[in-house]
Amino acid sequence: MIRALWSAATGMQAQQTNMDVIADNLANVNTTGFKHSRTDFQDLLYANLRAAGSETSSAGTQLPVGIQLGHGVKVVSVGKDFTQGSGIASSEDPMNVDMMVQGQGFFQIELPNGETAYTRDGSFKKSSDGNIVTSDGYPLIGAQLGFDPNTTTGIVVQASGSIDLKTSTPPGTSPNVGQIQLARFINPEGLTAIGNNLYKESVASGVPQLGNPNTDGFGTIQQHYLEQSNVNMVTEMVNMITTQRAYETGTKSIQTVDSMLNAVTSMKR
Amino acid sequence: MDSGLYATVNGALRTEMRMDVLANNLANVNTTGFKEDNITFDSYLTSPGIEQFPLPTDSFMGLRAPGDISFPFTNPASNAYRMTYPRADGTHVNLEQGAMQQTNNPLHVALEGKGFFVLDTPDGRRYTRDGSFRVNPVGELTSKDGFPVLGAGNAPLVVGDAGPIHIAEDGTITGSQGNIGRLQRVDLPPESLEKVGLNLYSAPQGAEIAMENSSEGIHQGFLEGSNANMIRSMTNMIDANRAMETYQKMIQALDSMDNQAANQIGSLK
Image (tube, helix red, strand yellow):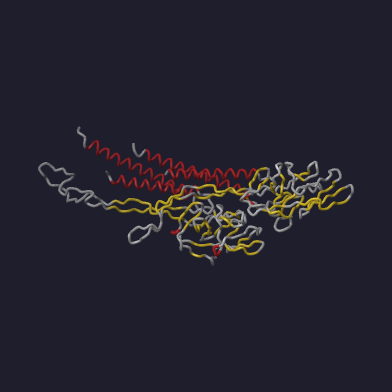
């Protein structure tokens, strides 16, 4: 019975974690480039009270079924789902450097400490020194253009990641002033999310493979588009319902065990 | 003491075990690929011999009526009578299909109908219905715990750098570079299954039934939900709770009978 009590408790704990994840997903339903997480559960070890197959007589007859009592559930992983979010058109302003990756690649961002982080959030901005940076001001690797804001009239990011500048003085286009490379991971679920829509590589993700967009499955870059969060509200709502109900059954199990234990203690008057 | 007391205690202990199983099922209502357990009970018959419960053949409880009137009943050889005791005979895995949940993750697969995926673990071959797979840093398709998923011919499935993969209904995996392999699917007789936790089952060697030509589908982008049935489990829980209360009342009643026997019958007024 104490086993049942703890089994129910593990169930409630697991559903609590699930609820945390769902709440985080729902909170990020409008976060550009956000990837929703999924909680995965596993059953815990079983106590074998009677092992199937043990001999029941000297004639070699065997128990056809055993008795296995489980100990509940645990959260095994909270993994990101990197499926593509839908694109949403942003401003067509020629100086607008919003981009999205259509495909598997990640933008590479240089962190202030010199390390490289990866992101799917392409809502880039222009810095005062003429570079393309994230909303936090971290530079997009390959896009340190150093353009002059006074003479530049347009920034064109090609699907292949090369960047052209349009200038008014002298009038014309200077092609290929920068080249954005994308990073791809064998196991993107293994990336470590560090907040601010950024990820870092980990042992589980494997080392990044770098390549130009539009080649070898890296995906293409589309300027003037942003990748929306891939959180699906309907799915999350349904998950929330099942989580709540699962949590409630946990409380019912505990109440029942409590009531049974109460019956046990009052056997002796 | 009254043997009814022991039969009742036996019943209460079985109820406790039943509650353990129910709590574990309910804790796993959101566990991918979980199959609920049922516990069954049978009874065994005791027929104690005369040696255990002897009675004098010519008197009742050794008392003799004044004047040596012979015992009025017909010669009871023993007060031993047959009793049946409940006992748990086994837990059975209910292999009913769980609900299909759409996740759209290309590495999620659900089995429709019979069968299991095969994983290569350090403890040998293990079987699972949980198809929430991922890719490890060397590119192999693995379970959440990192155990490689075996393909036909017991080879691990290397999908790593193949880009988006497609899994056909017969388990054939295709990447951008062509055929990768085929998910191995085997069936196991329910009585051979032993739950080992982590959503895994083990089975004795030779229990596998090949399912190469099965017409039952493997569905990519879906996961099989738990088949733990909340309504049935809740009803069973109410039943177990009431059973425990019944045992409580029986034990109280038997206790009060023994109390009267000990304190009132023999008292001198």
